Image (cartoon, rainbow, N blue to C red; front, side, top):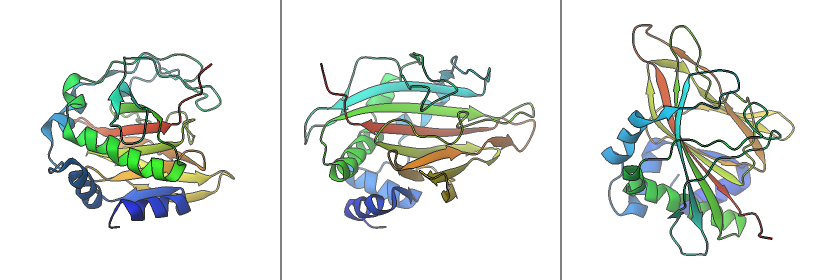
Length: 244
């Protein structure tokens, strides 16, 4: 995989695409004009997430932060918007949908990260070319899924699903002392069409949310006396709803 044009062509044809960490860091570094692989501001922010208090299954295994960005015209960078709730209908999230969920906001240092800026610009270039659209409602979700005390951690407790957006980027940040956590992709007829593991920091998957479902298998703690978790960044791109 060599460049954004190749990614656009393959994602348009295949509806999902795994990008290995080496390729992803090279692409992001080219966009940023600076190496992004060891950005401490970006990577350390996952150590400061807060517990998700909206888990309808009663689970205490998920920590997160959330932010919303917008792109209003071609050529514009993504702009941070005032903090707002995350909302999904029960059609897309039967477990936790149907309520406005006010998650802790992403911390200011992360918004100043060159890595995050490069990720947002990367998504804008790829998805704008595919969707012939230059306006985006963008949501960022930092996740830490924990496995402890013999209990599984569930990266997608709602099961295999769509997010109700146009496109999704999932970026692996860190895996610590866990087994499983495989990404699965299903077509609209619920046939398994892809399964792979995000292992390395900056391994990534791009998903056309209109064309495929995605999920992640539960994670299991390996060493019982050591902390165990899976950190990822999820970025969704959606064409803004038309105004009144």
